[in-house]
Length: 98
Image 1 (tube, helix red, strand yellow):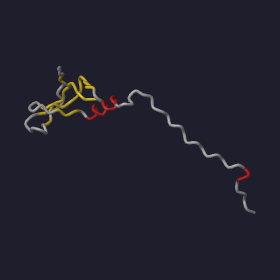
Image 2 (image 1 turned 120 degrees about the vertical axis):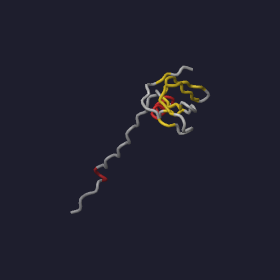
Image 3 (image 1 turned 90 degrees about the horizontal axis):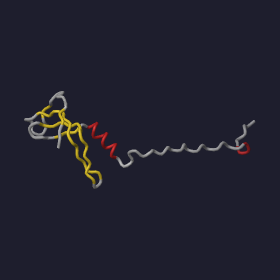
Image 4 (image 1 turned 60 degrees about the vertical axis):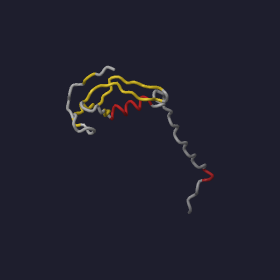
């Protein structure tokens, strides 16, 4: 597995071990879709230098879920506007009282 390093923007303390620092890196992300293993290279994550804990970028996870959704790439159906009610015919209209 090949891992790429991002430029170190900042490090944050690890919530798991409290001894390490989590830094942003690009890793290979693995997930299951149905019965198939999906791999996503160069996926952004925060990795602890001591315990190895991984936390994934929320926006990237949302983007990936959208791409892997069952309806991804399928055209959306346009909703037909609700039919308008027909105007009353002249014979059934109320007449003004005199």
